[in-house]
Each structure stands twice: as C-alpha cells, then as structure tokens.
Image (cartoon, rainbow, N blue to C red; front, side):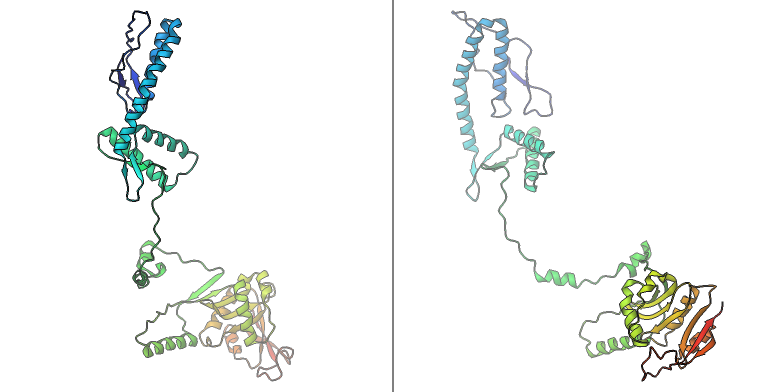
Length: 396
C-alpha cells in the first residue's frame, strides 16, 4: 500500500497526493484479492476521514480496472473494513476532544478547534464575505482563526477555543459608564483662538467669506453706541472683578446692498425716522446692487440709503439709527450710492429745516425748487419737521 505524502500547496492542511507506483496485490487460497492490512502509517492533517476515504476509493478503482467481475466482492470487502475502522476512529476522536475540553468562568464547555474545522470556518466566512458585510465579532473571529492556522504552519504553539454552541457568541455586555464631570470641566476650560485670527491663519493663509453684495468695510469708525457699550462692559468688570469676563471681539461696519434678511430692520428704521407704512421690498427686483447701500454692524442694520430705480436715480430715503449719528455713516452711504450710479443726475427732496441739507451741499447738490406743503400727506400735524421741502439736484 503506498504511503501518503503532502503535496506542495499553499494550504497543506487540505491537499494530499500519493505515489504513482501500483499497489501490490496478494491472492489467497480462494483466489480472491485480499485487502491490504490497515497497519500502515497514514499522515492525516486533522481528525477528518476525507483523506482515508479518498485512499480506499483510489485503490478500489485501480483494482476494479483489472478484474471487473470482482468489483462487487471488493466493494463488499471495503464496506466491511470501513465498518470496523470508523467506530474506532470516532471513539478515539471523541476521547481526544474530551481530554482537550475545558470550562470557562461561566460554566461553558470549550474545546480546541481541529484543523479541519478551522479551514472549514475560514472557507465559509470567505465565501460569504463577498455577499454580506461581516459583523465586528465575526471579523475578529475570522482573524483569530487565520492567525491560529498560520501558527500551526510555522510551528508556533497556540491554543484556540470556541464556544461549543456558536462560533459567533457575543461577549457579555456591560452597562455604559458616564465619564466623570472633571473631564467635561477640563474640556470647557480649554481656551482656543478662532482660525481667522490665529497665527496659523497668517502662516497658511485665510480667505474671509465674501458677503453677498459687499461694498465696503470700515474698521476705524467708533459710534456713540459702540463707546457706550464699551463703558458698560468696563463698569461691569470693575464692579464684578471675580467673575469671568467675555472678551470683546471687534467687528467692522459693513456696507452692503439690500438683502431679503435686511427688510424687517430697514422698515423699522424708516418708520422711526420718517413715517409708518414704508415698504421698500420692491427694490429687490430693481438692481439692489445699484439702488441701495445698507450699513450693518454685526447683524444690526444701522443705516440705509435707497434710490427709487436705476433709471430715475431719485434718492427716496437716507436714514441712520439713533446712537450712530456723527459717525460719518450717512456720508459714507451717500458717497457709495453716488459712486454706484456714475454719469447720472441725482435728485431728491429734503425738508426745509432738515440738517441733512448741509450734507447734500458738501456733495454738490443744489436747490432748484421750493415746494410748500410737500410733506403734508405724510407727516403728523404735531411733527417738528417742516412740511415744506427743497428739490435738490446733483448734476454730473
């Protein structure tokens, strides 16, 4: 009987071959072929009987090719022989597994995996890997099985045990524990600098977000309201030195064109300065980038200068919020409004006692007409503003 030898393959646990020499046959007195004795050395990679069954199958086929008449008798001999060998093999395997079994801390019976079981589990996991995404537990078990097989191939001793009921049993779950409050206090105490004003932004560069309809930015102007707020913060810090003070972040006054988000504040501003019921929402449809200049501090509208339309070029409203006067805001808005409409004459009406007359004169506006009772339909009879108006023109 030819001995088994391992073939050169990547997986030496599963592939076998045999010598090409023909087995020797012996004949008894009856002339029947005697099955060779099982006292031969068979190298098995695991407790699996696949290699032994393949060996007998090859032997039966080779003998059947010599004498077809004896094939049925040889098959019967093979079955009787296997019937006597298999129970012994199964009993030895069962005893070996019982000797290697152990019990974990929770009373579950564990045993080491055989080489055949390791290879079968890896094959099954790899076959399902393309169709489904394995869970983290299954992926961890697969990595351990592959590592165990590599250890056996290289001769490194290692023992791997699994639950006898399932290969993917989950570890016991513990209730989540809330972190101590000191961690959150430490994180809250960390003071950081915004990237826009940090030293890293100077090294790597920073491009500020461009405002929609931005016309100009003023970092130098300090209005009475800004000075008042600075005095309030200073007084509070002097009165409460032990309390944490939020630092004042300087922001500029931005001059932008009219946006839908400005409408509510613009209407409130015009109602305080002029009269109720003013609606300028139609300017959003007539080139607001040429017909409007809005002064914004943060998200607060502090001034507005509006034209009727690009064709008529008539200044309808010029207003500044209380607390922001004497800060050159009206001058800046009027300058940009004139600059946005070059080579066009600009007209407007102003009350006879309105101090804005001096501002318009500085820009070159000249009185062309005096109209009595121009504001009678708009102003209250108790208003201090004059009902009469001058019609001014800036000729270009």
